[in-house]
Structures are given as structure tokens and as C-alpha cells.
Image 1 (cartoon, rainbow, N blue to C red):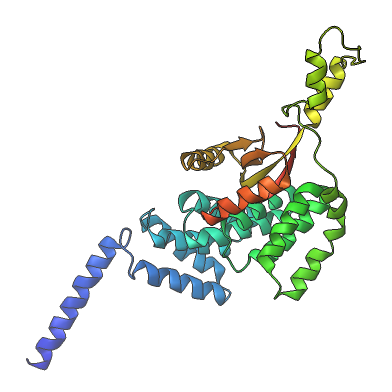
Image 2 (tube, rainbow, N blue to C red):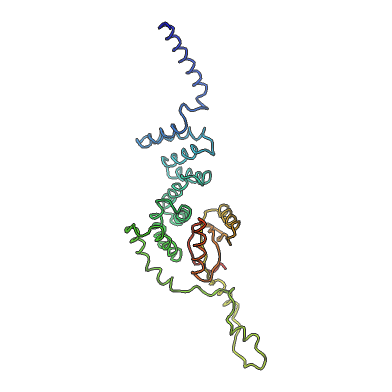
Length: 315
């Protein structure tokens, strides 16, 4: 082919391709989505977060909501957000739209850090609680467990702190001496709690001698059994305590209800405790810690993580 003909063909091809790109620029990206997201990540690493966010905005507009590219773009837009409120919005959106994705684990951990940074220890605690329960194999779980224990004790929640401490020891193991020592700092606070038995339950059977007194024949010598006043009975009910296995905690009742229904479908006595957040998903009501520990081991064998907690006044 003559040289002039080659030049003419190349020029025509360039004009045609430019026209097509101009017509499709608003609907079709010039590069595949994964390449577009990779470019955005590189821009962010180079310090050009603003341009990175613009690329990610474009990716989110064209990526199928159910696809992995959509999840990746949402995660990196949160990671490169200019303000904490924007990062929080995208992390929460990711947890709702892709709760089973690998990015959901880091999103939950990042939310906990954001809440902690702005001083909301309660919200940070609940995110960390969900993280350590939901993702037992995540490599960040040991350090998250230590932070969770510290936050619980700082808020005066000794019972939950001791439960989290026991779970944290299991997560950390014996290899990480630094984190183990940090947990041991709080261990003395649990000694008194461990030695104190739970308050008697109003649902438990009465002692045998009480039953005998109630059915004794008239000839039996009378025994002084004064009826407790109403206030005492009410106080006994409110002080009733039992052990339970907590498997999750949520900020809203809907996911907590779904988790409880899923556990019930598997034959577990699951329920949602709490009328305001956090909504805790718990299994069983046990009079002794040993029974609760056995139940927790059974749940763990089925791939359901949880920890034993002492519940007061909710039976």
C-alpha cells in the first residue's frame, strides 16, 4: 500500500475513533473498571487524592452495584475521603451493600477508628465488638480485641470487659507477648467478678424445705415465713442474673433480627436483647457459666463465634 494511502487510512481511523469516544465518553470508560480503580489508587498514593476521588466517582457511576468493582471503588473512595464524614458514609454504605465482601472487614474496623477518633467510645466499642465476633480469622483481630477491652473498662463495663478479655486471650494466643501483657493489665479487675456467683433467678425452683413447709399438715409446728413486701419481690426480679452467649451486636434492630432468625432456623434459642442500640444477639439463658461455656463451644464448632456474658435483670 502506498505511503500516502497508509497516512490517509490512519487519519480516517483516528477521526472515526475520536468521534466514537466523544459520543460514548459519558457512558463507557476509556479503560476497564479494574484499571480505572488501580489508577485512582496510584494517584492517592502519590498524594493526588482529589483526582483519585474523581476517578472513583466515575467508576461508581458505571460499575454494577452487585459487582466487586463497585465494592472496590466504594472502599477506596472512603479510604481517600477528604473528610471523616465522607469516609464514614461510604464505609457504612459498603457494609450495607456488600456485607460479605472481604472489604467489609476493614470497613468495620475503619468505622471503629473513626468513632474513636472523634471521642465516641460507645460507638467504637460496638463496631469493634462486631468485628472481633464476625471476623475471627482477620489478622487485625488480636489488636482490635485489646482496644475493645480497654474501651469497655474505660466505660466502666466490667462484666463485658472481662468477657472480651477472655475472648481476646484466645484470639491472641501465646505468641504475641506484647498484646498478651496489655490484656493481663486488666485481668485483676476480673478476679472479684469471677468469684461472685450470679444473683438467684426468680424462675429457679424453690428450695426443698420451702416446698415442705407449703404442704406441711396442720399438726406440723408453724414456721415463720413472712411474705416479702412487693418492693422486695420487684427488686429480686430486677436483680436476677444469668449467663448467655453473645454472638453479635448491631446499631439497628433489622440486622439483629435477621441474625436471630437465622440462628433459630438452626435450632438455637436466639433472641435480640435491647430496646435501643446496641441490639445484642444472644443465645440461651444459663444459670451457670459452665453451661454457657459449653454452649459457646457448641456454637463455635458450627462456625459461630461468641463470648459468654453475665446478663442482669433481663430474664
